[in-house]
Length: 70
Image (cartoon, rainbow, N blue to C red):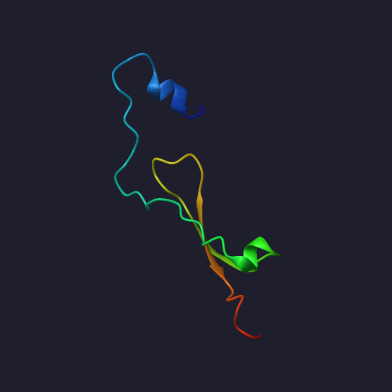
């Protein structure tokens, strides 16, 4: 047996309500600064978390400071 997909859960019934309890919050992007406009910024994926109510996982990424000397 498979799982019940989202379109089946929406169905033809009442108003669809997603799973909002335990959400991890909104996905955020880093500031689009000079370093990212004129090159790239290195980062490390620290964690991949499941967010209930979202169709895709979220990744926690730690970026290097582009203005600090290595």
